[in-house]
Image (cartoon, rainbow, N blue to C red; front, top):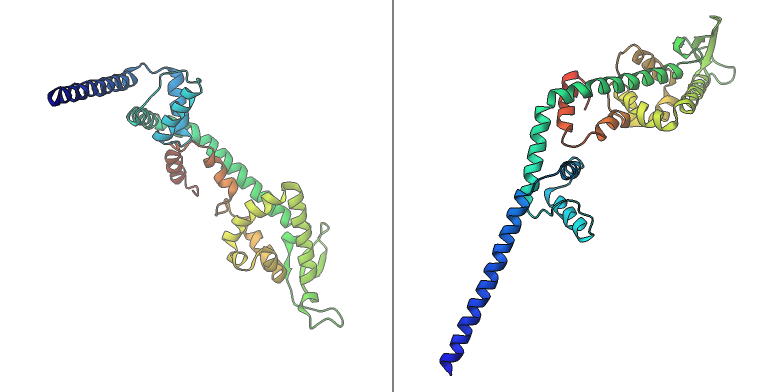
Length: 271
């Protein structure tokens, strides 16, 4: 009986080994089929789109499985990261080969965006100096009766109107005129563009704004701020970076961004 029992166990083990080997062979064949299956243009677009959107090889395989489970997979299931990695490498090589063409395509778009942004910054600066503030000068103070000790109300500045007549201003009056110009700029370009896109460039040229804040600096030294903006209007480009400067890059697929950054650095644009 003992011999018979041992024989049954051995036979059972052999059958188990055969089944395991059979499964292994089936998996190997499936993997080989997955690797050797012809890749359709639709599948390449699917993979390249996910790669360009920043998905990892594992994430892409999960998407294959998810679509397959839902019955929506229109091409063969893929089971190995090696397959996806090969497609990723092919895509990166293609990008490098097409590098010159991509740079040629991006350059006009980058230049146009930079030009439009700089034009907008210049227009906002011009609006801030409207109503004669572009002619503002600092003069000796001749105070208002009873308020001479209060620097806010001394006539310390002067501007010229459209008829070239001289108008004396106190610090308070100069601040109030500048405030109205800011309101006009915000109304035309929106508060977001002024505070989030113009002020970051202005901070780069007037560091005090970073430390004190825009309005505290304007209230304390309105003439100095207008004088600095007047100097900025003479520059061809304003330095610094704002959300609009980064907007174009954010829309570029991740695998192309190194080429975009290289092109920007060559052209001297901030990145």
